Length: 104
Image (cartoon, rainbow, N blue to C red; front, side, top):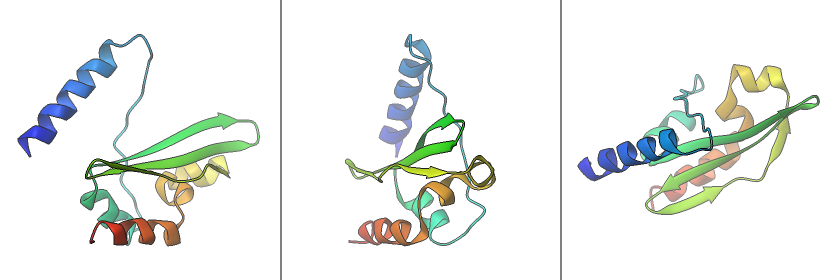
């Protein structure tokens, strides 16, 4: 556990000092299962997105036990994304499949 905290601190310092500006926010899911369990069982869940006039293109990157799982990019509406970013970019069915892998 200390290793994870130290690694997070080092990564944060590197991100803050790098010339590329990156933004990280802690997001919590209003929808419960499977999103809340997925957030607690994995090392990190990142929503990678770009905004444009038509909406938002997003994908989700999940890190668990040195394995990275990335979903396919999808286009969603700005309204849906602002309301529930994780559930909008990661369909429930796919979230359940990924969550099942954490129990193997």
